[in-house]
Image (cartoon, rainbow over all chains, first blue to last red; front, top):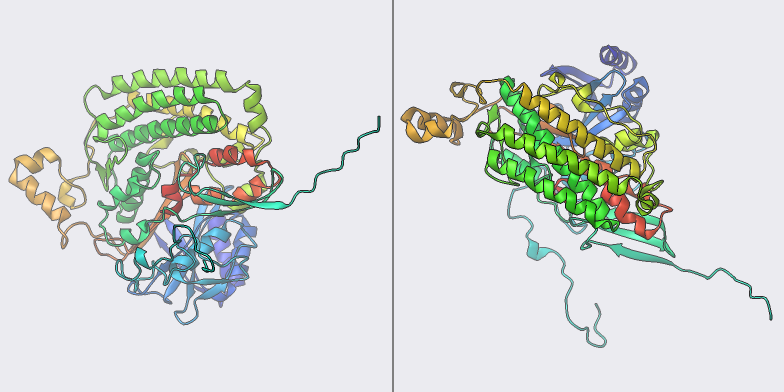
Length: 171
Length: 400
């Protein structure tokens, strides 16, 4: 009830930003353009979807879709016990969208994870750094064009040298 | 005699590394603490020490193979991960499993929940100096692990579920053993509560430490016992029942203060509710198969058939060979389940081939841990193990 009403309200309020509304296996997905993400998610939050259950991304390189990358938000309403998936599409050339950290603090770490694994940057995020991989890591491992083996090996990580430092030696 | 006047000592703020190797982290975590004397003024958790690229690996393994990877995520309750993943894959494919499978899954999940909570409470206690509670809990946990060994063949890397069923049915006499162990768990729960609930030191160390408010729960996406300890009436087993949880009669456990002590209380009461569920599951265990029809090409035939008949062997290869096997439709599914730590969800995107296109785990540990800086601020250094213990971080799931 809440879900259907909110989806039709969102369609009405942001007609130019909604790409599609689909259903698969009983789950409703709202596909949107990335530029209005913050407004649309605030709209959902005010409508009652106050819990951001999960934030992740998918690389559509071989799957196909509106754009190369999609950031997926799983929203949940505790009140009406309904879930909705919001999918924001980002172009390959400039994978950037607004951070939703101002709405949910949980987005902080999850957006960092998406940045780390996909190279998608989030504007106005307080600390846009890698979270799982070391800062010196090169590449974004969950992109489909990143090989499962071979790009970066452990021997390439910077190492702390053991032993007593000699005089005049820089660390 | 002149009067002595005291002036407060000047202290510099200090940076202290907590971990990555520290006995109270129970895994490889690092927290960079900023201290003013012994008071924490700021903290930066650093994670990723156990990052193993499970999600990348999932794109290369087929649906049944990935179940072995889910064991290694939350290694204190691997059966819950197995079930959560199998449910997601089944939803994606549109498979319906038998009632017996669902009841066995519920039984196994609840036994894992008991083991997980017992260990968590025990670890929290041992970090705060209460060794006895830990030993009591660990002993019955061992019995539960024996049950897992009897049913699944291993203690930790259970891999008990298959997409569309279970790897094998329960062994004979399993129900009697479970009832015996549950009896002991019941006693031990009482023992632990007798030891801790009115213990002055325990109360001083846990009350009003790391308080989570209702607003924090929504802002930080907190789920599971941590959210329920803050007074949020939300349990996925009751609100969005999966795997026949609607057939069972149990209560939603909440507490009101949201501190470490309340999280401990919620976990203890949840153990009792889990015992109730386990008993009901055994009582009304339906008869039947534990696998969907192998002819559909989704589940493996029983090992007996594989080894003793040529048809079984052919079916087995049909399912497991790289160019055959199950091919779900193009689509995606997200299934949230109530794991001992909170909402454990798997999000699978399929492109219609035999390996998933994307496997995302919604790790409760990671999301619950993100509130740590806020909880630790203003507390003493010695409260860090208490807060960490009450969050129950499992590094395998945190970093994946």
